[in-house]
Length: 284
Length: 284
DNA sequence: TAAGTTATGATATAAAATTACATTACCTAC
DNA sequence: GTAGGTAATGTAATTTTATATCATAACTTA
Image 1: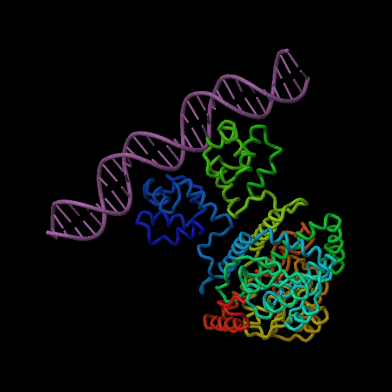
Image 2: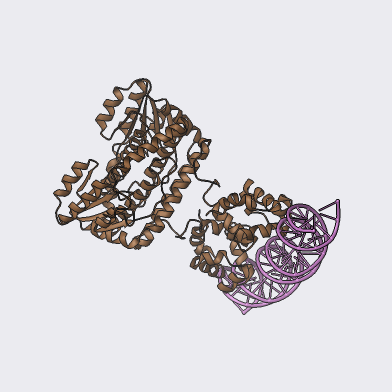
Protein backbone atom coordinates (compact mmCIF):
# COMPACT_ATOMS: atom_id res chain seq x y z
CA UNK A 1 0.00 0.00 0.00
CA UNK A 2 0.90 3.58 -0.70
CA UNK A 3 2.72 5.10 2.28
CA UNK A 4 0.54 8.18 2.43
CA UNK A 5 -2.59 6.05 2.53
CA UNK A 6 -0.96 4.06 5.28
CA UNK A 7 -0.38 7.18 7.34
CA UNK A 8 -4.01 8.13 6.87
CA UNK A 9 -5.27 4.68 7.72
CA UNK A 10 -3.15 4.24 10.83
CA UNK A 11 -4.19 7.61 12.19
CA UNK A 12 -6.28 6.06 14.95
CA UNK A 13 -3.53 3.73 16.05
CA UNK A 14 -1.02 6.45 16.73
CA UNK A 15 -0.34 8.00 20.09
CA UNK A 16 -1.19 11.63 20.65
CA UNK A 17 2.19 12.98 19.61
CA UNK A 18 2.56 10.60 16.74
CA UNK A 19 -0.79 11.71 15.45
CA UNK A 20 0.49 15.28 15.43
CA UNK A 21 3.30 14.14 13.18
CA UNK A 22 0.89 12.27 10.92
CA UNK A 23 -1.32 15.32 10.59
CA UNK A 24 1.55 17.57 9.64
CA UNK A 25 2.60 15.09 7.00
CA UNK A 26 -0.89 14.63 5.61
CA UNK A 27 -1.42 18.37 5.52
CA UNK A 28 1.59 18.86 3.32
CA UNK A 29 3.43 15.73 2.25
CA UNK A 30 5.55 17.65 -0.22
CA UNK A 31 6.92 19.77 2.59
CA UNK A 32 7.50 16.71 4.71
CA UNK A 33 9.78 14.95 2.25
CA UNK A 34 11.93 18.04 1.95
CA UNK A 35 12.30 18.63 5.66
CA UNK A 36 14.81 17.33 8.15
CA UNK A 37 13.67 15.45 11.18
CA UNK A 38 14.34 18.55 13.28
CA UNK A 39 12.17 20.78 11.08
CA UNK A 40 9.36 18.29 10.99
CA UNK A 41 9.51 17.78 14.73
CA UNK A 42 9.22 21.50 15.24
CA UNK A 43 6.30 21.74 12.83
CA UNK A 44 4.44 19.01 14.68
CA UNK A 45 5.55 20.46 18.00
CA UNK A 46 7.04 17.20 19.19
CA UNK A 47 10.56 15.95 19.83
CA UNK A 48 12.80 14.45 17.20
CA UNK A 49 12.75 10.94 18.63
CA UNK A 50 8.98 10.99 18.41
CA UNK A 51 9.20 11.58 14.69
CA UNK A 52 11.65 8.75 14.48
CA UNK A 53 9.38 6.41 16.40
CA UNK A 54 6.54 7.44 14.16
CA UNK A 55 8.56 6.36 11.14
CA UNK A 56 9.40 2.99 12.64
CA UNK A 57 5.80 2.35 13.51
CA UNK A 58 5.14 2.46 9.77
CA UNK A 59 7.62 -0.32 9.08
CA UNK A 60 10.43 1.84 7.85
CA UNK A 61 14.01 1.78 9.04
CA UNK A 62 13.97 5.37 10.23
CA UNK A 63 13.30 8.89 9.12
CA UNK A 64 15.33 8.95 5.89
CA UNK A 65 13.84 5.64 4.85
CA UNK A 66 10.37 6.91 5.60
CA UNK A 67 10.97 9.98 3.46
CA UNK A 68 12.01 7.73 0.61
CA UNK A 69 8.83 5.72 0.86
CA UNK A 70 6.72 8.82 1.14
CA UNK A 71 8.44 10.34 -1.87
CA UNK A 72 7.57 7.28 -3.89
CA UNK A 73 3.94 7.46 -2.93
CA UNK A 74 3.90 11.07 -4.09
CA UNK A 75 5.64 10.34 -7.35
CA UNK A 76 2.49 10.24 -9.43
CA UNK A 77 1.20 13.68 -8.82
CA UNK A 78 -1.56 14.56 -6.44
CA UNK A 79 -1.53 12.63 -3.24
CA UNK A 80 -5.10 11.47 -2.98
CA UNK A 81 -5.34 9.40 0.09
CA UNK A 82 -8.05 7.19 -1.31
CA UNK A 83 -8.71 6.39 -4.92
CA UNK A 84 -12.29 5.46 -4.31
CA UNK A 85 -14.80 7.90 -5.58
CA UNK A 86 -17.05 9.23 -2.85
CA UNK A 87 -20.48 10.77 -2.92
CA UNK A 88 -19.25 14.29 -2.19
CA UNK A 89 -16.13 14.34 -4.36
CA UNK A 90 -15.55 17.48 -6.38
CA UNK A 91 -15.02 17.17 -10.15
CA UNK A 92 -11.39 17.87 -9.46
CA UNK A 93 -11.07 15.03 -7.01
CA UNK A 94 -13.02 12.34 -8.83
CA UNK A 95 -11.17 13.15 -12.03
CA UNK A 96 -7.86 12.66 -10.30
CA UNK A 97 -9.01 9.52 -8.56
CA UNK A 98 -10.19 7.89 -11.76
CA UNK A 99 -7.01 8.74 -13.61
CA UNK A 100 -4.89 7.50 -10.74
CA UNK A 101 -6.74 4.28 -10.27
CA UNK A 102 -6.54 3.69 -14.02
CA UNK A 103 -2.79 4.08 -13.90
CA UNK A 104 -2.54 1.84 -10.87
CA UNK A 105 -4.57 -0.85 -12.62
CA UNK A 106 -2.31 -0.75 -15.62
CA UNK A 107 0.61 -1.24 -13.32
CA UNK A 108 -1.00 -4.26 -11.72
CA UNK A 109 -1.94 -5.68 -15.09
CA UNK A 110 1.57 -5.36 -16.40
CA UNK A 111 3.02 -7.12 -13.42
CA UNK A 112 0.73 -10.07 -13.87
CA UNK A 113 1.18 -10.31 -17.61
CA UNK A 114 3.27 -13.24 -18.78
CA UNK A 115 5.63 -11.92 -21.44
CA UNK A 116 6.39 -15.35 -22.82
CA UNK A 117 2.70 -15.66 -23.67
CA UNK A 118 2.94 -12.27 -25.36
CA UNK A 119 5.84 -13.51 -27.39
CA UNK A 120 4.00 -16.66 -28.45
CA UNK A 121 0.94 -14.62 -29.34
CA UNK A 122 3.08 -12.40 -31.56
CA UNK A 123 4.46 -15.55 -33.20
CA UNK A 124 0.98 -16.77 -33.95
CA UNK A 125 -0.27 -13.39 -35.16
CA UNK A 126 2.59 -12.82 -37.59
CA UNK A 127 1.82 -16.15 -39.25
CA UNK A 128 -1.92 -15.66 -39.43
CA UNK A 129 -3.81 -15.83 -42.72
CA UNK A 130 -6.64 -13.88 -41.16
CA UNK A 131 -7.09 -12.41 -37.70
CA UNK A 132 -10.49 -12.11 -36.01
CA UNK A 133 -11.12 -10.02 -32.92
CA UNK A 134 -14.23 -10.83 -30.94
CA UNK A 135 -15.55 -9.36 -27.73
CA UNK A 136 -18.90 -8.48 -26.24
CA UNK A 137 -20.07 -5.49 -24.25
CA UNK A 138 -17.17 -3.34 -23.14
CA UNK A 139 -14.72 -5.77 -24.72
CA UNK A 140 -16.37 -5.19 -28.09
CA UNK A 141 -14.82 -1.74 -28.19
CA UNK A 142 -11.47 -3.30 -27.50
CA UNK A 143 -11.94 -5.71 -30.40
CA UNK A 144 -12.94 -2.76 -32.54
CA UNK A 145 -9.77 -0.95 -31.57
CA UNK A 146 -7.66 -4.00 -32.33
CA UNK A 147 -9.24 -4.21 -35.74
CA UNK A 148 -8.30 -0.60 -36.39
CA UNK A 149 -4.68 -1.34 -35.49
CA UNK A 150 -4.17 -4.59 -37.34
CA UNK A 151 -6.02 -3.31 -40.37
CA UNK A 152 -3.16 -0.88 -40.86
CA UNK A 153 -0.80 -3.84 -41.05
CA UNK A 154 -2.49 -4.89 -44.25
CA UNK A 155 -3.58 -8.21 -42.76
CA UNK A 156 -7.13 -9.47 -43.35
CA UNK A 157 -8.92 -8.54 -40.13
CA UNK A 158 -12.38 -9.52 -39.00
CA UNK A 159 -14.29 -7.97 -36.13
CA UNK A 160 -17.89 -8.58 -35.08
CA UNK A 161 -19.71 -7.53 -31.97
CA UNK A 162 -22.72 -9.65 -32.84
CA UNK A 163 -22.91 -13.07 -31.23
CA UNK A 164 -24.29 -14.80 -34.29
CA UNK A 165 -21.85 -13.23 -36.72
CA UNK A 166 -19.03 -14.24 -34.41
CA UNK A 167 -20.30 -17.78 -34.32
CA UNK A 168 -20.77 -18.03 -38.07
CA UNK A 169 -17.34 -16.64 -38.61
CA UNK A 170 -15.82 -19.26 -36.33
CA UNK A 171 -17.73 -22.08 -37.97
CA UNK A 172 -16.05 -21.11 -41.22
CA UNK A 173 -12.56 -20.99 -39.70
CA UNK A 174 -9.65 -22.84 -41.23
CA UNK A 175 -6.13 -23.83 -40.36
CA UNK A 176 -3.96 -20.71 -40.33
CA UNK A 177 -6.70 -18.44 -39.08
CA UNK A 178 -6.26 -16.77 -35.75
CA UNK A 179 -9.13 -15.83 -33.46
CA UNK A 180 -8.50 -13.38 -30.62
CA UNK A 181 -11.17 -13.48 -27.94
CA UNK A 182 -11.41 -10.68 -25.44
CA UNK A 183 -13.23 -11.07 -22.15
CA UNK A 184 -12.42 -9.64 -18.77
CA UNK A 185 -14.13 -12.35 -16.75
CA UNK A 186 -13.51 -15.22 -19.16
CA UNK A 187 -16.96 -16.49 -18.27
CA UNK A 188 -19.07 -15.22 -21.12
CA UNK A 189 -20.84 -18.34 -22.37
CA UNK A 190 -20.99 -17.51 -26.03
CA UNK A 191 -17.29 -16.66 -26.23
CA UNK A 192 -16.36 -19.93 -24.55
CA UNK A 193 -18.40 -21.81 -27.11
CA UNK A 194 -16.87 -19.86 -29.96
CA UNK A 195 -13.40 -20.68 -28.69
CA UNK A 196 -14.13 -24.37 -28.92
CA UNK A 197 -15.71 -24.10 -32.36
CA UNK A 198 -12.77 -22.15 -33.75
CA UNK A 199 -10.29 -24.57 -32.27
CA UNK A 200 -12.13 -27.56 -33.67
CA UNK A 201 -11.84 -26.02 -37.09
CA UNK A 202 -8.07 -25.72 -36.77
CA UNK A 203 -7.81 -22.05 -35.93
CA UNK A 204 -5.41 -20.78 -33.27
CA UNK A 205 -7.35 -19.15 -30.46
CA UNK A 206 -5.73 -16.42 -28.37
CA UNK A 207 -7.65 -15.36 -25.28
CA UNK A 208 -7.08 -12.01 -23.62
CA UNK A 209 -8.79 -12.85 -20.39
CA UNK A 210 -8.51 -13.81 -16.73
CA UNK A 211 -6.14 -16.50 -15.52
CA UNK A 212 -7.77 -19.89 -14.89
CA UNK A 213 -11.08 -18.75 -16.31
CA UNK A 214 -13.21 -21.16 -18.35
CA UNK A 215 -12.31 -19.20 -21.47
CA UNK A 216 -8.60 -19.46 -20.76
CA UNK A 217 -8.89 -23.26 -20.76
CA UNK A 218 -10.59 -23.27 -24.15
CA UNK A 219 -7.85 -21.25 -25.84
CA UNK A 220 -4.79 -22.40 -27.71
CA UNK A 221 -2.90 -19.60 -26.02
CA UNK A 222 -4.32 -17.71 -23.06
CA UNK A 223 -2.79 -14.28 -22.51
CA UNK A 224 -3.95 -13.73 -18.99
CA UNK A 225 -3.71 -10.90 -16.55
CA UNK A 226 -4.99 -9.75 -13.27
CA UNK A 227 -6.88 -6.49 -13.11
CA UNK A 228 -8.43 -5.06 -9.98
CA UNK A 229 -12.20 -5.30 -10.10
CA UNK A 230 -14.11 -2.24 -11.23
CA UNK A 231 -16.24 -1.99 -8.17
CA UNK A 232 -16.71 1.72 -7.62
CA UNK A 233 -19.31 2.54 -10.18
CA UNK A 234 -20.43 -0.82 -11.48
CA UNK A 235 -18.94 0.14 -14.80
CA UNK A 236 -16.11 -1.62 -16.60
CA UNK A 237 -13.21 0.80 -16.54
CA UNK A 238 -9.78 -0.56 -15.63
CA UNK A 239 -10.28 -3.93 -17.30
CA UNK A 240 -10.72 -2.61 -20.81
CA UNK A 241 -7.77 -0.23 -20.46
CA UNK A 242 -5.51 -3.14 -19.63
CA UNK A 243 -6.91 -5.07 -22.58
CA UNK A 244 -6.27 -2.14 -24.89
CA UNK A 245 -2.71 -1.74 -23.78
CA UNK A 246 -2.23 -5.48 -24.24
CA UNK A 247 -3.45 -5.05 -27.81
CA UNK A 248 -0.91 -2.26 -28.18
CA UNK A 249 1.80 -4.58 -26.95
CA UNK A 250 0.78 -7.30 -29.40
CA UNK A 251 0.64 -4.80 -32.25
CA UNK A 252 4.05 -3.46 -31.33
CA UNK A 253 5.50 -6.96 -31.14
CA UNK A 254 3.98 -7.60 -34.52
CA UNK A 255 5.61 -4.59 -36.14
CA UNK A 256 8.96 -5.30 -34.50
CA UNK A 257 8.87 -8.82 -35.86
CA UNK A 258 8.16 -7.50 -39.31
CA UNK A 259 11.19 -5.23 -39.36
CA UNK A 260 11.85 -1.58 -40.21
CA UNK A 261 10.61 -1.60 -43.78
CA UNK A 262 7.21 -2.62 -42.52
CA UNK A 263 7.14 0.37 -40.23
CA UNK A 264 7.72 2.74 -43.12
CA UNK A 265 4.53 1.32 -44.44
CA UNK A 266 2.69 2.28 -41.28
CA UNK A 267 4.07 5.75 -41.61
CA UNK A 268 2.58 5.95 -45.08
CA UNK A 269 -0.81 4.84 -43.78
CA UNK A 270 -0.65 7.67 -41.30
CA UNK A 271 0.35 10.16 -44.00
CA UNK A 272 -2.67 9.22 -46.08
CA UNK A 273 -4.96 9.77 -43.12
CA UNK A 274 -3.75 13.35 -42.97
CA UNK A 275 -5.66 14.13 -46.12
CA UNK A 276 -8.89 13.80 -44.23
CA UNK A 277 -7.71 16.54 -41.92
CA UNK A 278 -7.72 20.27 -42.18
CA UNK A 279 -4.36 21.90 -42.51
CA UNK A 280 -2.37 22.71 -39.41
CA UNK A 281 -2.11 26.39 -40.28
CA UNK A 282 -5.76 26.65 -41.02
CA UNK A 283 -7.89 27.62 -38.09
CA UNK A 284 -11.11 26.98 -40.05
CA UNK B 1 12.03 14.24 -16.97
CA UNK B 2 12.47 11.14 -14.91
CA UNK B 3 15.68 11.36 -12.89
CA UNK B 4 16.93 7.97 -13.96
CA UNK B 5 16.48 8.89 -17.61
CA UNK B 6 18.33 12.08 -16.87
CA UNK B 7 21.27 10.16 -15.45
CA UNK B 8 21.34 7.99 -18.55
CA UNK B 9 21.05 10.92 -20.89
CA UNK B 10 23.75 13.00 -19.24
CA UNK B 11 26.17 10.09 -19.21
CA UNK B 12 28.36 11.68 -21.86
CA UNK B 13 28.51 15.01 -20.07
CA UNK B 14 29.91 13.60 -16.87
CA UNK B 15 33.54 13.52 -15.93
CA UNK B 16 35.29 10.19 -15.61
CA UNK B 17 34.58 9.73 -11.92
CA UNK B 18 31.09 11.07 -12.14
CA UNK B 19 30.38 8.57 -14.86
CA UNK B 20 31.48 5.80 -12.53
CA UNK B 21 28.84 7.01 -10.10
CA UNK B 22 26.22 7.16 -12.84
CA UNK B 23 27.01 3.65 -13.91
CA UNK B 24 26.70 2.25 -10.43
CA UNK B 25 23.36 3.96 -10.06
CA UNK B 26 22.07 2.80 -13.43
CA UNK B 27 23.21 -0.74 -12.70
CA UNK B 28 21.16 -0.92 -9.57
CA UNK B 29 19.07 2.11 -8.78
CA UNK B 30 17.24 0.29 -6.01
CA UNK B 31 20.50 -0.25 -4.20
CA UNK B 32 21.49 3.35 -4.75
CA UNK B 33 18.48 4.86 -3.03
CA UNK B 34 19.09 2.71 0.02
CA UNK B 35 22.77 3.49 0.34
CA UNK B 36 24.55 6.27 2.15
CA UNK B 37 26.85 8.56 0.27
CA UNK B 38 29.82 6.67 1.75
CA UNK B 39 28.57 3.29 0.55
CA UNK B 40 27.82 4.57 -2.89
CA UNK B 41 31.19 6.27 -3.15
CA UNK B 42 32.89 3.02 -2.25
CA UNK B 43 30.81 1.09 -4.79
CA UNK B 44 31.76 3.50 -7.53
CA UNK B 45 35.31 3.64 -6.25
CA UNK B 46 35.32 7.41 -5.95
CA UNK B 47 35.38 9.85 -3.07
CA UNK B 48 32.30 11.07 -1.27
CA UNK B 49 32.54 14.65 -2.52
CA UNK B 50 32.51 13.31 -6.06
CA UNK B 51 29.18 11.67 -5.44
CA UNK B 52 27.93 14.92 -4.00
CA UNK B 53 29.12 16.88 -7.00
CA UNK B 54 27.45 14.35 -9.24
CA UNK B 55 24.16 14.98 -7.49
CA UNK B 56 24.44 18.73 -7.86
CA UNK B 57 25.22 18.44 -11.52
CA UNK B 58 21.76 16.93 -11.88
CA UNK B 59 20.11 19.96 -10.39
CA UNK B 60 19.50 18.56 -6.97
CA UNK B 61 20.40 20.15 -3.68
CA UNK B 62 22.68 17.32 -2.62
CA UNK B 63 22.82 13.62 -2.06
CA UNK B 64 19.67 13.19 0.06
CA UNK B 65 17.70 15.32 -2.36
CA UNK B 66 19.01 13.30 -5.25
CA UNK B 67 17.94 10.08 -3.57
CA UNK B 68 14.47 11.51 -3.15
CA UNK B 69 14.23 12.32 -6.82
CA UNK B 70 15.61 8.97 -7.81
CA UNK B 71 13.17 7.20 -5.54
CA UNK B 72 10.31 9.00 -7.24
CA UNK B 73 11.47 7.96 -10.65
CA UNK B 74 11.55 4.36 -9.46
CA UNK B 75 8.12 4.54 -7.89
CA UNK B 76 6.31 2.89 -10.75
CA UNK B 77 8.14 -0.39 -10.87
CA UNK B 78 10.74 -1.30 -13.39
CA UNK B 79 13.22 1.41 -14.10
CA UNK B 80 13.36 1.41 -17.84
CA UNK B 81 15.70 4.14 -18.81
CA UNK B 82 13.88 4.90 -22.02
CA UNK B 83 10.26 4.30 -22.79
CA UNK B 84 10.85 4.28 -26.48
CA UNK B 85 10.58 0.90 -28.08
CA UNK B 86 13.76 -0.12 -29.85
CA UNK B 87 14.42 -2.57 -32.64
CA UNK B 88 16.06 -5.14 -30.39
CA UNK B 89 13.77 -4.94 -27.38
CA UNK B 90 12.76 -8.21 -25.82
CA UNK B 91 9.05 -8.94 -25.33
CA UNK B 92 9.63 -8.27 -21.66
CA UNK B 93 11.09 -4.87 -22.31
CA UNK B 94 8.70 -3.59 -24.95
CA UNK B 95 5.76 -4.76 -22.86
CA UNK B 96 7.00 -2.78 -19.90
CA UNK B 97 7.80 0.24 -22.00
CA UNK B 98 4.37 0.38 -23.55
CA UNK B 99 2.62 0.00 -20.23
CA UNK B 100 4.81 2.63 -18.66
CA UNK B 101 4.43 5.13 -21.43
CA UNK B 102 0.67 4.56 -21.33
CA UNK B 103 0.63 5.37 -17.66
CA UNK B 104 2.82 8.41 -18.18
CA UNK B 105 0.50 9.68 -20.90
CA UNK B 106 -2.50 9.34 -18.65
CA UNK B 107 -0.67 11.38 -16.08
CA UNK B 108 0.07 14.12 -18.58
CA UNK B 109 -3.50 14.07 -19.83
CA UNK B 110 -4.92 14.44 -16.37
CA UNK B 111 -2.72 17.38 -15.60
CA UNK B 112 -3.86 19.21 -18.69
CA UNK B 113 -7.52 18.41 -18.24
CA UNK B 114 -9.68 21.31 -17.13
CA UNK B 115 -11.98 20.03 -14.42
CA UNK B 116 -14.37 22.93 -14.73
CA UNK B 117 -15.00 21.83 -18.31
CA UNK B 118 -15.60 18.31 -17.00
CA UNK B 119 -18.13 19.69 -14.58
CA UNK B 120 -19.94 21.66 -17.27
CA UNK B 121 -19.96 18.61 -19.51
CA UNK B 122 -21.57 16.57 -16.76
CA UNK B 123 -24.18 19.32 -16.38
CA UNK B 124 -24.99 19.14 -20.04
CA UNK B 125 -25.04 15.35 -20.16
CA UNK B 126 -27.37 14.95 -17.20
CA UNK B 127 -29.89 17.21 -18.92
CA UNK B 128 -29.66 15.58 -22.32
CA UNK B 129 -32.69 14.17 -24.09
CA UNK B 130 -30.42 12.00 -26.22
CA UNK B 131 -26.66 11.61 -26.27
CA UNK B 132 -24.72 10.84 -29.46
CA UNK B 133 -21.10 9.72 -29.48
CA UNK B 134 -19.22 10.11 -32.74
CA UNK B 135 -15.63 9.39 -33.61
CA UNK B 136 -13.70 8.03 -36.57
CA UNK B 137 -10.83 5.58 -36.80
CA UNK B 138 -9.34 4.88 -33.40
CA UNK B 139 -11.74 7.33 -31.79
CA UNK B 140 -14.66 5.28 -33.09
CA UNK B 141 -13.82 2.59 -30.53
CA UNK B 142 -13.90 5.23 -27.85
CA UNK B 143 -17.33 6.36 -28.98
CA UNK B 144 -18.40 2.75 -28.97
CA UNK B 145 -17.17 2.36 -25.42
CA UNK B 146 -18.97 5.51 -24.34
CA UNK B 147 -22.16 4.17 -25.82
CA UNK B 148 -21.77 0.99 -23.82
CA UNK B 149 -21.42 3.03 -20.61
CA UNK B 150 -24.17 5.55 -21.09
CA UNK B 151 -26.53 2.92 -22.38
CA UNK B 152 -26.49 1.44 -18.90
CA UNK B 153 -27.74 4.75 -17.57
CA UNK B 154 -30.96 4.21 -19.41
CA UNK B 155 -30.48 7.34 -21.51
CA UNK B 156 -31.15 7.22 -25.26
CA UNK B 157 -27.68 6.82 -26.76
CA UNK B 158 -26.65 7.00 -30.39
CA UNK B 159 -23.30 5.91 -31.78
CA UNK B 160 -22.23 5.71 -35.41
CA UNK B 161 -18.82 5.18 -36.91
CA UNK B 162 -20.06 5.91 -40.39
CA UNK B 163 -19.54 9.44 -41.68
CA UNK B 164 -22.87 9.64 -43.44
CA UNK B 165 -24.88 8.22 -40.59
CA UNK B 166 -23.21 10.69 -38.26
CA UNK B 167 -24.09 13.54 -40.57
CA UNK B 168 -27.68 12.46 -41.00
CA UNK B 169 -28.04 12.06 -37.30
CA UNK B 170 -26.77 15.60 -36.71
CA UNK B 171 -29.05 17.07 -39.35
CA UNK B 172 -31.96 15.70 -37.36
CA UNK B 173 -30.72 17.09 -34.08
CA UNK B 174 -32.94 19.18 -31.88
CA UNK B 175 -32.68 21.39 -28.86
CA UNK B 176 -31.88 19.26 -25.81
CA UNK B 177 -29.81 16.74 -27.74
CA UNK B 178 -26.15 16.39 -26.88
CA UNK B 179 -23.49 15.39 -29.37
CA UNK B 180 -20.11 14.25 -28.09
CA UNK B 181 -17.39 14.36 -30.72
CA UNK B 182 -14.15 12.53 -30.13
CA UNK B 183 -11.01 13.35 -32.07
CA UNK B 184 -7.41 13.36 -30.92
CA UNK B 185 -6.19 15.88 -33.46
CA UNK B 186 -9.38 17.91 -33.69
CA UNK B 187 -8.66 18.31 -37.39
CA UNK B 188 -10.86 15.65 -38.92
CA UNK B 189 -12.84 17.53 -41.53
CA UNK B 190 -16.07 15.62 -41.34
CA UNK B 191 -16.30 15.92 -37.57
CA UNK B 192 -15.73 19.65 -37.73
CA UNK B 193 -18.59 19.95 -40.19
CA UNK B 194 -20.83 17.79 -38.06
CA UNK B 195 -20.12 19.94 -35.03
CA UNK B 196 -21.40 22.98 -36.87
CA UNK B 197 -24.47 21.23 -38.19
CA UNK B 198 -25.42 19.92 -34.78
CA UNK B 199 -24.91 23.30 -33.21
CA UNK B 200 -27.01 25.03 -35.85
CA UNK B 201 -29.83 22.65 -34.99
CA UNK B 202 -29.71 23.61 -31.35
CA UNK B 203 -27.80 20.63 -29.98
CA UNK B 204 -25.08 21.03 -27.36
CA UNK B 205 -21.77 19.85 -28.78
CA UNK B 206 -19.08 18.52 -26.44
CA UNK B 207 -15.68 17.94 -28.02
CA UNK B 208 -13.15 15.59 -26.47
CA UNK B 209 -10.19 16.83 -28.44
CA UNK B 210 -7.01 18.91 -28.55
CA UNK B 211 -6.85 22.42 -27.15
CA UNK B 212 -7.15 25.18 -29.77
CA UNK B 213 -7.92 22.72 -32.53
CA UNK B 214 -10.43 23.61 -35.25
CA UNK B 215 -12.87 21.17 -33.73
CA UNK B 216 -12.55 22.73 -30.29
CA UNK B 217 -13.66 26.07 -31.75
CA UNK B 218 -16.78 24.54 -33.27
CA UNK B 219 -17.98 22.99 -30.01
CA UNK B 220 -20.33 24.39 -27.42
CA UNK B 221 -18.01 22.97 -24.80
CA UNK B 222 -14.53 21.74 -25.64
CA UNK B 223 -13.09 19.28 -23.13
CA UNK B 224 -9.49 19.52 -24.15
CA UNK B 225 -6.34 17.78 -23.10
CA UNK B 226 -2.77 17.39 -24.02
CA UNK B 227 -1.51 13.91 -24.82
CA UNK B 228 2.03 13.13 -25.92
CA UNK B 229 2.16 12.19 -29.57
CA UNK B 230 2.12 8.50 -30.41
CA UNK B 231 5.27 8.59 -32.40
CA UNK B 232 6.91 5.27 -31.74
CA UNK B 233 4.91 2.96 -33.91
CA UNK B 234 2.76 5.25 -35.97
CA UNK B 235 -0.23 3.80 -34.18
CA UNK B 236 -2.69 5.65 -32.00
CA UNK B 237 -2.12 4.39 -28.49
CA UNK B 238 -1.90 6.92 -25.69
CA UNK B 239 -4.45 9.30 -27.18
CA UNK B 240 -7.37 6.91 -27.08
CA UNK B 241 -6.54 5.75 -23.56
CA UNK B 242 -6.78 9.31 -22.34
CA UNK B 243 -10.07 9.71 -24.19
CA UNK B 244 -11.44 6.55 -22.63
CA UNK B 245 -10.52 7.61 -19.13
CA UNK B 246 -12.11 10.98 -19.82
CA UNK B 247 -15.29 9.14 -20.77
CA UNK B 248 -15.01 7.26 -17.47
CA UNK B 249 -14.72 10.55 -15.64
CA UNK B 250 -17.80 11.94 -17.40
CA UNK B 251 -19.74 8.76 -16.70
CA UNK B 252 -18.73 8.87 -13.07
CA UNK B 253 -19.70 12.51 -12.78
CA UNK B 254 -23.00 11.59 -14.35
CA UNK B 255 -23.76 8.87 -11.81
CA UNK B 256 -22.66 11.04 -8.91
CA UNK B 257 -25.02 13.77 -10.07
CA UNK B 258 -27.85 11.30 -10.25
CA UNK B 259 -27.43 10.15 -6.66
CA UNK B 260 -27.21 6.81 -4.87
CA UNK B 261 -30.51 5.36 -5.96
CA UNK B 262 -29.37 5.63 -9.54
CA UNK B 263 -26.30 3.61 -8.71
CA UNK B 264 -28.37 0.76 -7.37
CA UNK B 265 -29.81 0.68 -10.81
CA UNK B 266 -26.37 0.21 -12.32
CA UNK B 267 -25.77 -2.61 -9.93
CA UNK B 268 -28.89 -4.30 -11.20
CA UNK B 269 -27.72 -3.94 -14.79
CA UNK B 270 -24.52 -5.65 -13.82
CA UNK B 271 -26.40 -8.44 -12.05
CA UNK B 272 -28.42 -9.16 -15.15
CA UNK B 273 -25.28 -9.43 -17.22
CA UNK B 274 -24.13 -12.23 -14.95
CA UNK B 275 -26.74 -14.50 -16.44
CA UNK B 276 -24.81 -14.59 -19.66
CA UNK B 277 -21.85 -15.99 -17.76
CA UNK B 278 -20.98 -19.46 -16.64
CA UNK B 279 -21.07 -20.03 -12.92
CA UNK B 280 -18.02 -19.18 -10.87
CA UNK B 281 -17.76 -22.71 -9.49
CA UNK B 282 -18.04 -24.29 -12.88
CA UNK B 283 -14.73 -24.91 -14.53
CA UNK B 284 -16.33 -26.02 -17.81
C1' DT C 1 57.25 21.05 -20.92
C1' DA C 2 55.42 24.90 -18.31
C1' DA C 3 51.27 27.36 -16.99
C1' DG C 4 46.78 27.13 -16.43
C1' DT C 5 42.64 24.69 -15.81
C1' DT C 6 39.78 21.17 -14.30
C1' DA C 7 38.92 17.02 -11.71
C1' DT C 8 39.45 14.43 -7.64
C1' DG C 9 40.37 13.24 -3.03
C1' DA C 10 41.74 13.94 2.12
C1' DT C 11 40.47 16.14 5.95
C1' DA C 12 37.66 19.04 8.80
C1' DT C 13 33.28 20.71 9.87
C1' DA C 14 28.54 20.86 10.10
C1' DA C 15 24.21 18.77 9.95
C1' DA C 16 21.21 15.13 10.75
C1' DA C 17 19.54 11.04 12.74
C1' DT C 18 19.58 7.70 16.32
C1' DT C 19 20.38 5.82 20.93
C1' DA C 20 20.17 5.71 25.75
C1' DC C 21 18.27 7.31 29.43
C1' DA C 22 15.37 10.47 32.28
C1' DT C 23 11.10 12.48 33.03
C1' DT C 24 6.36 13.07 32.67
C1' DA C 25 1.63 11.74 31.99
C1' DC C 26 -1.60 8.41 32.41
C1' DC C 27 -3.90 4.41 34.14
C1' DT C 28 -5.29 0.92 37.61
C1' DA C 29 -5.75 -1.24 42.10
C1' DC C 30 -6.20 -0.65 46.67
C1' DG D 1 -7.15 9.79 46.49
C1' DT D 2 -2.76 7.95 46.13
C1' DA D 3 1.00 4.40 45.35
C1' DG D 4 2.84 1.66 41.90
C1' DG D 5 3.26 0.53 37.45
C1' DT D 6 3.23 1.35 32.43
C1' DA D 7 3.36 3.81 28.29
C1' DA D 8 4.56 8.11 26.08
C1' DT D 9 7.53 11.77 25.39
C1' DG D 10 11.52 14.54 25.78
C1' DT D 11 16.68 15.76 26.81
C1' DA D 12 21.16 15.08 25.98
C1' DA D 13 24.89 12.29 24.14
C1' DT D 14 26.49 9.63 20.42
C1' DT D 15 26.86 8.13 16.00
C1' DT D 16 26.16 8.49 11.36
C1' DT D 17 25.93 11.09 7.29
C1' DA D 18 26.67 14.88 4.28
C1' DT D 19 29.08 19.03 2.95
C1' DA D 20 32.79 22.61 2.73
C1' DT D 21 37.47 23.65 2.38
C1' DC D 22 41.61 23.06 0.73
C1' DA D 23 45.50 20.37 -1.31
C1' DT D 24 46.96 17.52 -4.85
C1' DA D 25 46.73 15.21 -9.12
C1' DA D 26 45.50 14.86 -13.94
C1' DC D 27 44.78 16.72 -17.99
C1' DT D 28 45.03 20.80 -21.78
C1' DT D 29 46.92 23.97 -24.49
C1' DA D 30 50.42 27.05 -25.92
